[in-house]
Amino acid sequence: MKTEAENVLKLRNVRPTAMRLMVFDYLKNRKAAVTLADLENDFDHSERTTLYRTLKTFEKNRVVHQINDGSGIAKYALDLNFQDKFSAKDLHLHFHCNVCNATVCLTDQKIPHISLPEGFVAEDMNLLLKGICDNCT
Amino acid sequence: MKTEAENVLKLRNVRPTAMRLMVFDYLKNRKAAVTLADLENDFDHSERTTLYRTLKTFEKNRVVHQINDGSGIAKYALDLNFQDKFSAKDLHLHFHCNVCNATVCLTDQKIPHISLPEGFVAEDMNLLLKGICDNCT
DNA sequence: TTGATATATGCAATAGAGTTGCATCACTAA
DNA sequence: TTAGTGATGCAACTCTATTGCATATATCAA
Ligand SMILES: [Mn+2]
Ligand SMILES: [Mn+2]
Ligand SMILES: [Zn+2]
Ligand SMILES: [Zn+2]
Image (cartoon, rainbow over all chains, first blue to last red):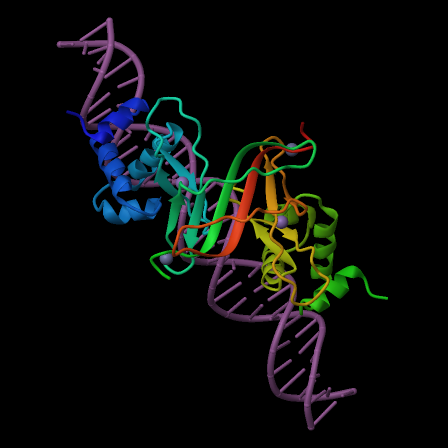
């Protein structure tokens, strides 16, 4: 019986090292998106570079996606569409709380279709809302 | 007869120094959003710090707005709603071209209303589309 | 006009996130 | 078992953003 972490990493062709499994579980248990600094703080005796490369490997293999919430610091959250190997990119909006500084994925909020002027072709989209989150209201 | 630059800066309570007027006109004549590095390149013998603080002053006084296009480098574009002193923030979408790397304001594209889960209060919004711009198709 | 005050600029140093090179270690497959 | 590939540890470095402080310039009231 394999853990979810092992299954997902295998599905994404990421070798399930001890560090990667721990980082996966860490991400899994956090409600808000995670920075490299978060990992450094919470994985006390781990190497910054290894954590960095873990995130980059996860990103490249679609285990996580990077979120840019305007703070200038990259945040990462797990991709949730682990079902199949070639699932489409999961477009959803992100919410950044100006009070607690947390950034979360709102995967249930669908992004409406945006029409563009002639000549523009959209390939990707990021929708970020800022305000006060449900923990801070 | 004052120039537009002088009028706008006065309206925004920004002292119209020579540098600021030049930067304003520069921004005015560029179709795409501008980085600090752009200013450094095109204002050859100017101080990086002065250009930096010019952008920051413009931003604070709502002469420009900052755009985060995911490149990790801040870009700036003129606010266009100069009409009145206390006009509301002009929400519009931004388009980043993956080919020429330009980022532009699409002020005519209205951002649809987004409904949020209970407890979330939105104060601001950023919508970024990435793809191929009209110059590159 | 002049002196006091506030603001802008120039220059240098620093902060901080992100990234890379390289040696060593661990795992995998033949 | 061994060669080869990938992961990790450690250090150095890049690049953008930011700050401190001295000097210059503008503003304003007397
Ligand atoms: Mn997300
Ligand atoms: Mn804009
Ligand atoms: Zn909050
Ligand atoms: Zn383009």
